Length: 366
Image 1 (cartoon, rainbow, N blue to C red):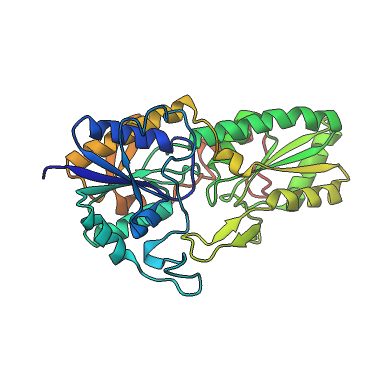
Image 2: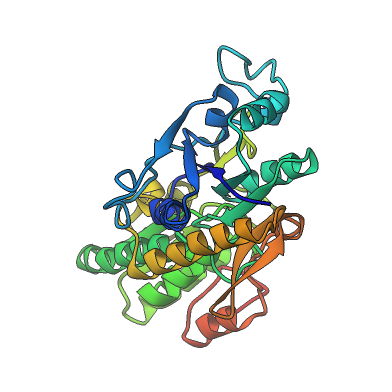
């Protein structure tokens, strides 16, 4: 098969490194004489047939740029399309046939999709319909089991760690408990590693249910030893021993309708009420997604992008580029989405955190 024309899109939540992947794919393709179309706003561009022609000038200078020059969407699901004027949240439509038609109408040989769990699930559905796709994993959550690390995670981790560093001084000055809320959905990687790197006292992650009384007793014990402040790092998806999570809202039509959030404020009120210690919540939110990617993410994104185009040339359709043991590899998309990669409650990282005195707010662990 002679590859002459490819499409590329970025879908799901934005993150640092997306532009670096687009750049690597495009530069690799263009120097081989392959035409590149960049679809706007994820799969929405494929449904609406909205794209840009990517040239060397298009990708010049975007290596260090956060976000994505193509735009993205985490609600434009062609299989359950809810956007006007073609669908509504109450009346989703299957427009996958329209996306397939546009793929063929543009005479594309393949499509490179860059995204997280939701994007990969949609990519697999299109693969099953016969569309030749190569995928690149993107998520700040680092929760895809088929790859050691996704790009965007290191940047988010760096931002969260810096926030904890900065909150230490204000917490110490005012003798407060500071609760830092990180992203991560149902995996605690950002919270755990940022807490370890930033010297957090308590870390709450989805994989280890927490108990209010354990948190309160830990803070009071610190106070009794002359430690007048505490730092709590809470993943947005952390749950208590009753399985309760803080849910900010739901979004109809999204591949993941539940929007987690609010745990920091919930914990702040609880801690202040039960300890009498002034508490403050700091929700990092989308600051973890924005801005310039770290050097590591620029490097990793470039490897992912170059590998994706190599996979296209090798006709590895239905596969995803993966980073394993500091080498690039490929895995089936179907295998990549089979399981979420979550923190092992009995793994080395949790053990190390416990050994330096951190608490997971659990009556079982630590």
